[in-house]
Length: 131
Image (cartoon, rainbow, N blue to C red; front, top):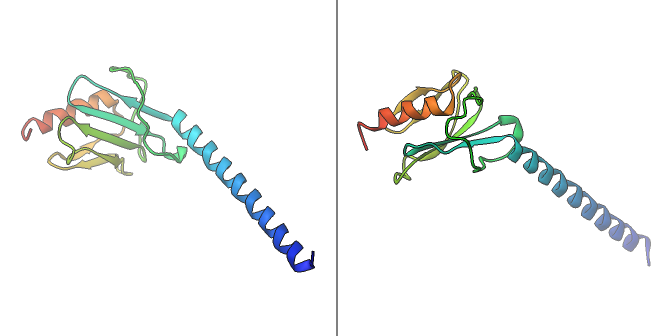
């Protein structure tokens, strides 16, 4: 085997090792992210789910307590607003630094400092004019 062949094999082994390390690192971040996610299914046609911005993960659906007041929405959280039978209104929205979110038909809504239930009730009330 020539030096060029050995260098090529060594580079391939190093590349595979790097790929394995990166994939396990990304998997670890996703697992941590799912633990930091909170979702609330409420009695109305609006569902909210929030993900911590530091979790580096997408919004994850999980069972939540309908009236859990322990979670307070903060700036940079990402909320999944799902309106029953209205997929064009349903979407993931980030909480801006001013503490508000923007939704079609509803406009701007103050989100920070509120529980998901409080925000859900506000959005549902505003949507009653349209749906």
